[in-house]
Length: 215
Image: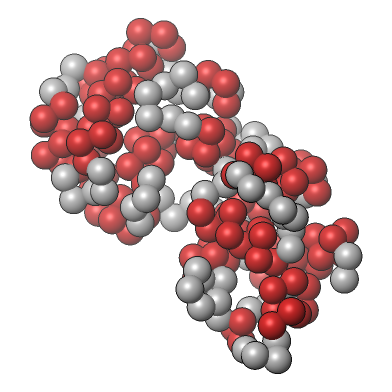
């Protein structure tokens, strides 16, 4: 199967079997999602969702977060990975949001990346999930799954993977495809031992076709 056929097969499969794919992070608005995504770096969504209710009770707005002490933010998020850095990033993000954007989360990837703690992946998530932009966040799941399945070829960086995916997925489906790949990598195409026997796209998967006699 060539790359065009593989993309077509996989898009068709997920369109039928997971048409309403969405983020597993819990949020109510752009500010809450931004905080949740910053916290989720190298941490599970489940752990983040256990932490954010208390966080948003204390800091329901960027204005209140901007005035918070880093040590107080740390106390709330200390069960999250890298809490020291993330506490500083969250305070810094809120300060810049208030100073430069009137407390309103910007809707462009370029402006989002001006916020402390917000790299391209985080910016893409917010742009995609909240503002429905055709952005493709590439985390470890997407990077791994795209390469393993055969959607990306010789991509050495997340940006290279992002470019290949956005070039081959229809714009109207890019934001949803992000969730397809993340969820597939989280629950089926796992890092150490992919569950190929449970996979619905094995017929189009480059990895499976190359290893099916040993699986």
